[in-house]
Length: 247
Image (cartoon, rainbow, N blue to C red):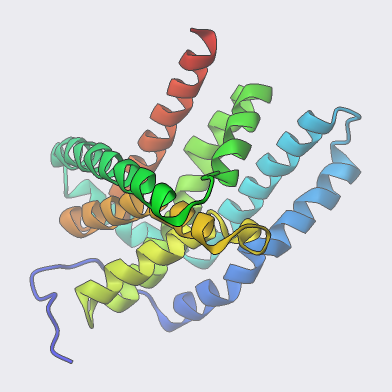
């Protein structure tokens, strides 16, 4: 297959990083959740169910961030060096990324409404509901988890792992696969519990972010740009939730 990425330089992964990242996915999806549960029950117990859940989420985020950083430490250091060469252009990338995100999110919301009617299903986003509950119960822990811990872990395991690896062969498949994996990672746990139509709508909800985060990485040449944009998107969403509850 002819390469179509001659003008883009995203860095590269070593074989050990690629294999380590692939092997880490089961840990990211399941293993670290169970480990966080037992650690909290042992070291940080509470009789408050909501607070206990929040502590598990926070511990889960810390575990993933630490282990992912350990596996990809060379790649992340290289991406940080690339970031220093961007300079003030970083803010331009973030601004354009936000504009693209909100525009595509609006289009996705319109498509969701149309598909909801065509498929005859009741749309529900379990991940979004969990985030709203988390934010309402312990906003401080939610901010740390969703704005500081999750963005780096998710960007490395989607954009860093799949987008970079596939980009050398095909931009189309690099975008398509990384977007799909990013979307499925946010709703995989409830897929067996809901109709296929609801799953399709949930996947659609996260595709705009998946595309924009890959685009700013490609445009800037540093994964840290997409990490910062991811954190910014989450921060805006959390702030909106807090303000709406107080209104």
